[in-house]
Length: 122
Image (cartoon, rainbow, N blue to C red; front, side):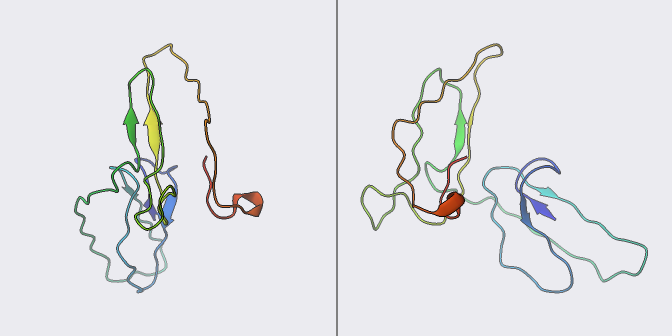
């Protein structure tokens, strides 16, 4: 299992088995967890994984520590005033111990769908 974050409870990116080699897997941050499991009924020849840092999409994710800030998704190059396609951005807001965070959604205009099937903000 390839997980998108620093622990076994991080979101699952890919679960691999058999011999099908996947396309490269890209995490949404600087952490990934790789979990390998084998049972007692046989084995294959194993695996080899390489990794390299890759530049993220500017503005797609990050950590905010300032007392106030503004978060918006990266804009599309082809459509003005729209966010880009195929994004998986994660922002972390971390204030000093004892402080609370008030989030104010100033504008929300995402692709329409039932049950947030397509684009969503969580």
